[in-house]
Length: 192
Length: 380
Image 1 (cartoon, helix red, strand yellow):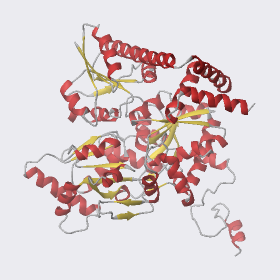
Image 2 (cartoon, one colour):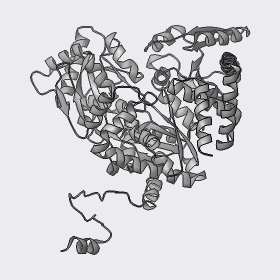
Image 3 (spheres, helix red, strand yellow):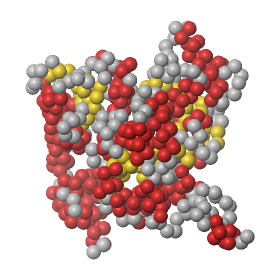
Image 4 (cartoon, helix red, strand yellow):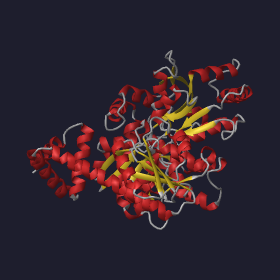
């Protein structure tokens, strides 16, 4: 039995990962959200073999302590990277996931768990994006499409990167994506 | 060229933020995109896995990654040393009072005195059967870890046995103090000031009391990035050198404080940032202000990677059992901190005040390679 602990500030996403991992009879999965420095007691109590962590969790650095001093934890914890290829880790980080395992576990079993988690994180992101789009009106969507086209031409980006750029700018400035799209269109008209 | 650089919301991200937001990178043809991160682990992973080309990173972490002390060995190159100093030791009110009592009237601002007092306090607590003192710091490979250990080590305290050192994200430290999970911490600005402002603790020492020129953050890239995109690395370095000069000028401090305070950067009050930049910190609730111009050093003279500092950090890693001392390690450390790119970037720059290492109040610039021209110019 592989004990997996999923720590995610996003409860809904954690539940989706949990449901997917339950399909494996060899996996015992538990989910948790962590607030303000409560990670160490939680880890001591849950003693997981595999730890799946949301990258937006500031507590990630606390885990580093378990990797250095074993005083806090019976078995050393290592960051999961498949020695032969770092691609798995790269994909995981892109999806917003990090994974830790206790030393001495079989990489293949852990990799399967990680793949499930990463796939669910990606799916969650896709759903959220679709929901975003569904919420925007047709007129707004047209603005966003035009702005995406401008960014793709001007910066040699693909469609997804162009959308993500608009979205992250909108989040930073606390504006709607369509408003940012409108600014891009206006700016490009002025610069013609 | 587009360069993505990760940063942690701290005042010492100043040079990187200025390079992006004050146009220094754009002037060098670099589209510098800053990405705010929540943890050093994320900065490390995204830099080593290629999601970032560069990062604002703890100097010892850049070295640890280059040495392979962490999960993977990825040689990094330090383009610019972003700052020296800037951290403080803060103790909760009760612990501060207990330490003051143990100091027996001697000046507690002297780290020899405070260290000796801490040793007595540790012994007294053990004798009374009280729990160990807990101190938080930011990362195993951090100046804060080494500063606390240096202070304790000098007083004959074993930081691995006599107290507990724990890793904690800076924004949680004040909460942890409030809830009694920690007795004190060492962290960079503005967090110690936040604890003082809410009346939870007192600043015991500036990091510079322990080590006068403590290496803090650097701007690092992967060595492979420098090899593959040498021109871009040089351009970025030039932008950072110009940004350092701008940040170092006192007349720009207010503008810099506002850049850093912005919602997408640190998202804190500009006044708090300004006080850190000026080295003018309130150290207790009564409003006692301690001023020290080198509280946080952001200046051109300190921007060149100084291999002595890297080797000092390596020595601390060896001292505390994180690294082995060997020739290969030493070479890897020296490579990580090699000033080669920095020097090449400087040579290719015009119209920048590089400083001559002397800093006379009136010209000409001192040139150690050409004394006769210098003497002719100065008119002797």
